[in-house]
Image (tube, rainbow, N blue to C red; front, side, top):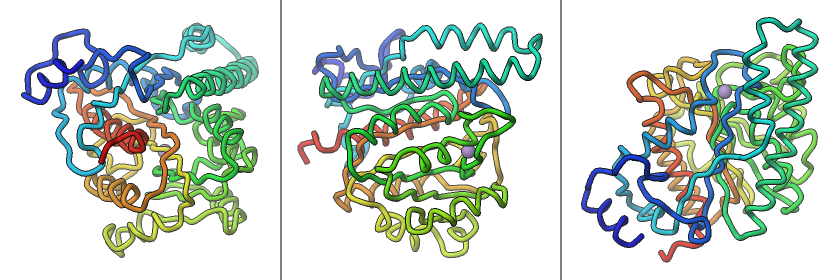
Length: 332
Ligand SMILES: [Mn+2]
């Protein structure tokens, strides 16, 4: 591995077929597993997010890895990507292939059943990885993917917060009859997982009245940073307020559509406005500097682009999320 790290640091091209960020890290040597979940049964808008993990893996070979601060040489701690291996992934593909022929009711029942199976599979797999001493970052797939991971963290931690970067609250009770759609992930999380003492949605700019009421009803369990309010005040003037809202243990749920759509034009439900790339870097740097521990993260709703742009941006965000999550192992 030392030789691969040294070559990357000299800026050499990555040979084809390599692992995440260009390194072949064996399971026993990795500190963190990026668990890829190629899933898109929970989407309402455009499709294609199931293809994100492979596209982000390829794009991760094309980015230079130098970073200062908490992300400095984070890859040296061993970052490995592997896919969730469970029959439900193939069952999803079969269902997607026959969807146009199914009646709506059959579709909804079967999607709900498969989504429930996926949640259980993700919960069990993340529990196994954690039991074997690995940190975990999920790579979707759509934003319904992390529920099982959040359920697992809810068993493990008495109290944690969610830094939720998104254009949407994702707090619909159900969407088009789907209980576990990407539009309901935070409704499911906040109603099911008592250990989540705080949710901090950031960049929100597209929501219905019922969702807003639901979030307001969470009272002190939610601190909302709407995109337009952030714009008016300037991100640098808000960033410490965002961090201060969060408890000592933090999970980061990153929907790529939180970003300005020029950074993720192919995502399924893009919305004008949004966070700049440097806003995210600043937020992560301040979160790290605050001493809070990132206990896990997800990156969802990436849809690959013909010119590989969306996955290029996503690979850079993924590196930051991995660095934040392994930082306890870093010799600062
Ligand atoms: Mn979203």
